[in-house]
Structures are given as structure tokens and as C-alpha cells.
Length: 355
Image 1 (cartoon, rainbow, N blue to C red):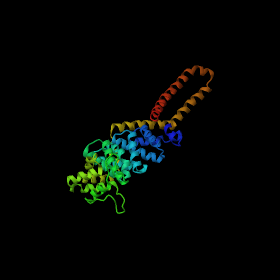
Image 2: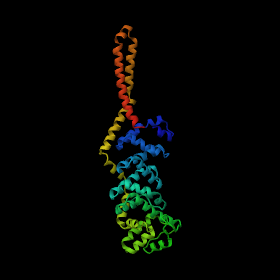
Image 3: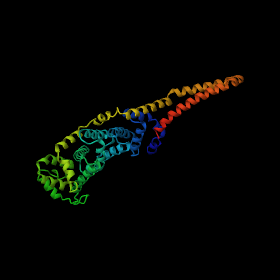
Image 4: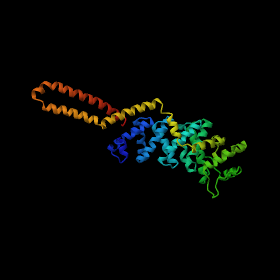
């Protein structure tokens, strides 16, 4: 808890007051209180307020469980998507929903999509590609090529970056290949596609790609290869073809990404019957029990009981005291031992979860 206090304006006491909230989240999401603490700490370190931290934490816990990712990886994936596409932390559920829905309808999984997106996100946003469409493009590439998510994320980044570099007037892309705007514009116009809109502004990358993919099957192989090369460069030609070769699939996945509300919750619910979730719930229940003991009337009543014994001891005659001191001390010692063992054990379990 002190780690969070260091990076926030809250005192350790204030943070201890949130233990019950953290335990409730742990119980709801089938994780340990320690897990909730670890994730919230990652977001507090980003300078977020408590409301933003709670939004991001709950969705990150869901993503981690759905994808089998560790908490730090899931938090990184969430942060990349939200920051790159200029979303708010209150949109964290949407990120989980999109990844979950797209993974459910393609031969990809949430972890693959998150890894690939970590390579692509910032470049995609810079050329106007939406989070949903970028996720769909990555999923189709993963499904079609079965290359690693990291390689395909880097490949789509190169393709998108080339478009962005052409947009700002560069003549060589980041991989050292020539960019020729006039040739690209002429080639696309020959198949009925414009690089720029009516106001003379470059169109968003995903719009151009989706329009090209719809015309792809009608083009001969030579034209396809030429367009792929001029749009993506020689090194990424095959990956570009994999992206646009099946426009119906790309369109289907993109529509699924747009219509993904509560998909994360649906996928997450399937994990709640796992042994891991049940064990986490047991641990959290024990933590809740010990906290209720420490914060409840039981401790106070036991202390009052011991105090009454001591007060009675003080009123005994000296003779009675001498006769009974052994048994009285033994009784107090027994009660003390029970208290120490019980509460030290309980507090130790709680403390272990909050280091």
C-alpha cells in the first residue's frame, strides 16, 4: 500500500480504507486482492485519478484472465490502445470488448491482437485508422498467414508508416524503399480509387484499404502485385496481399469489431468456473473474514473480557491471590496465546497480499 501512497496524494490510512473496495473487485473478477493491488499500482504510477484507475484496473483484470496474460502485460496492452488512439480510460471496457469479439470470430486470440497492436497502434492512428479497423486488419493477417503476432504487427506498422510518409511528402520509406506519390496515385485511380478526398486531403488509410479490398478479386494478378508493391514496398508485398485478398472476411471482422458491446464480459464469464478463479475467491473470502474480525466488535469484546479478569484480580485478597495466581495467569496466558496465534496468522495473510 505504501507504494501507491508514494505516487498519489492519499495517505496510507486513506488507502487502507479502500481495502474493502479492492476485496470486492477481487471477489467479482475471481482474482486475488494482491492482483487488484498490483494492477491499480501500475495505473497510479501513470498519474491517473482514482476513478480512472478503477476503470482501467477492472478491465485489465478481465483482459488478463481472458487472454492468459500477466497483469503487467495486460496493463501495457490496455495503455497502448487507449493512448495511441486517443481514448479515455473510461473506454477501457471498449478495448476489452473489441479484442474479445475479434478473437472470438477469427483464428486469433486476445494476446496475439494485443501484441500486434503494440507494434502498430501509434502509426495507425497517425493515418486515421480506427482502433476497431486496425484490430480487424491485424486479425485477418494473423488468420491468413499464421505468422507471429509480433512480426505481423511490425509488418502492418511498416505498411501504414509508408502511407504516412507518402502523406507528408517523403520519397523513401522507413525500410529504405522508394515512395512515389504520382505512381501510387495513378495506379489507384486506374482501378477507381482516390488517395485524396474532394478537399484535396489524404483519405484515412483504412478507408483506402477497405475500398481496395472490395475491388481486389476483380483485378488480374499482375495488377494486384503492382498495387501491393507500390502501396507496401517489396518487403511487405506478401503481407499486404494477405490483408486485402479476402475483402469479405475483412469487412465481416471489421463489422464485428464495431458491434462488440459486452463481448469482453461474455468471454470473461467463461473463465469464472476455472480452478484458479475459485481458489482466488477462497483467498479473498479469508481476507474479508479477517478484516471483518479486526474491524468488528469481536476484538473489542475479548479485550473487555480480559480487562474484567484483570480488574477482578486486583480486588482479590492477597491470600486468594496467592492461591489462585497460578490458575489465573495460566488462563490469561491461554487466552493471549489464542489471540496472538489467531490474529497474527490472519493479519499475516492480509499483509502478504498487500506488500
